[in-house]
Length: 101
Image 1: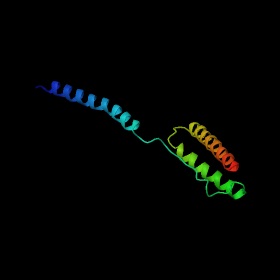
Image 2: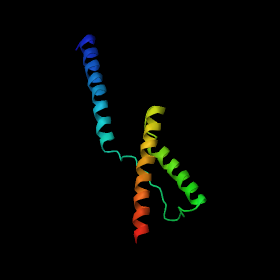
Image 3: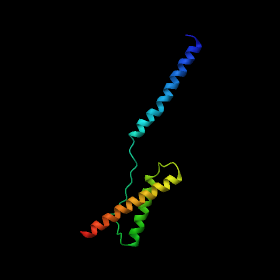
Image 4: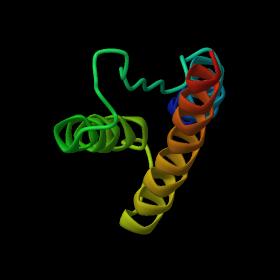
């Protein structure tokens, strides 16, 4: 085999290997766990200022953690606002449900 054929074969194999890398990365990303965040509120007195402040701190921490994968500051801010809105709605629903019992 002459040198040009060998070089062409090596280049072909290298191209195939490089083309397979993004496909392998996609399958790995598909099986990755989605981000999760939780805010514990059972130990808080939501009627007190201290309880509300602790809740706000926990919610901010959870929202920042949940949105770490966003690539820009604008996307991170929008993600964090959406997380806060969703958690606040769930907490409000649970507080209303608990007050009926």
